[in-house]
Length: 310
Ligand code: PSU
Ligand code: MN
Image (tube, rainbow, N blue to C red; front, side, top):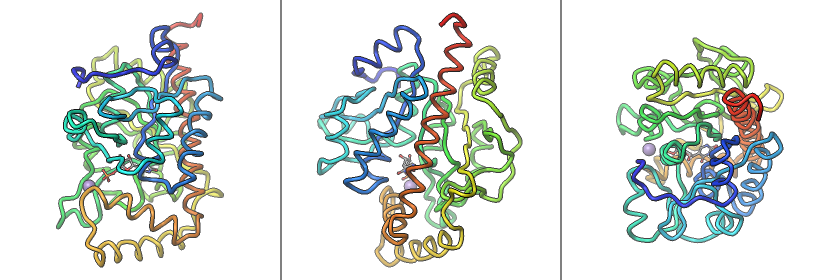
């Protein structure tokens, strides 16, 4: 992965050179996870949330075949609004680069590229994982495999609730991915505060998460990812009954419309956003903004830990 040629945004390059806090952000959430035209506004708000907490945002994506770490506003606008922006997982990067494509990077691809760029903290909404019909379809997100071998902390509200959460947690354990709840011992359920599954570990401050990152380096146990699971407060979650109804309907439609492969997640998210008349969209945006804020505070704590004078 370090062999990929990366182009850096000016501000991100400068921040990395000076060891200032940087937070990686993905572009698939913008191009495929959120409806237009809100997606561009939200993409800018996510970057602003990182800045407000004292870090530099590095939104990652591909523009005309070039891998960019720290898209500028014109590039962000292009990935949010252009036709034919491809959803890129790790396996797609080389083909997309060779063909000069515009592409949005998933959690898997963004993690790999961020780590290659020397960025240690990444914020997203919800991780990909094991799909509910995986026993038949074998549909499991490449996010899991990427996190097994990529040294990065990913702040997320758990895995998307459209997935089989229990199976995903089992796979994270098998793959050696550390999972820590932020101020909770319950794994969050993305749109829902609590997925119903317990966690072994909890951390209650950005400083403690920075300590965990440092301990991983000191002890040479940082080959894989660290999932920082950050739940929404219960008064901000999607109504659980509305959630379950909408999900059942979405899953039935998947079958009816013959949706499979990488189209499944964007299809289900779009179904939620239209069927709940935007309620799930508002929740999704809150999730991302809160995660961007926490990720920035972790990056700030990690930078201070490395250089208390900074
Ligand atoms: N989180 C969100 N919305 C999204 C995603 C995450 O709130 O759209 C994206 C991420 O890019 C993640 C992808 O990697 O969904 C998972 O897709 P799949 O299940 O096809 O691996
Ligand atoms: Mn899949």
